[in-house]
Image (tube, rainbow, N blue to C red; front, side, top):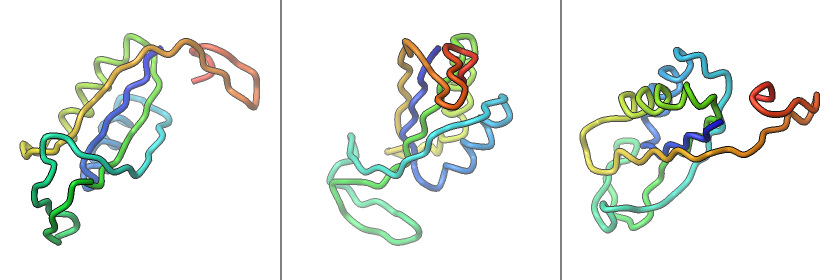
Length: 112
């Protein structure tokens, strides 16, 4: 199993969600986060307003999927989140050692 974590611009959330849903991804975790990368200290546009900040609002999407589905998830998220502008985000892929569905006690890939 793999954990695919994508940090994206907030206005790209719906596009990324739709792209992942079309792959059969049944669930994801979405968090509002703040951070900076290479664009630190630059002017950003957020919801139509221009401002200068070191901490830029982003969205973090986390998806746990089968190993063979992970490359497709990365490709779909990258294509949907791409705008060509600085600050488009990053995608990380991590190994997941174990998953447990709390309600049923299922483990491994059946818990997804």
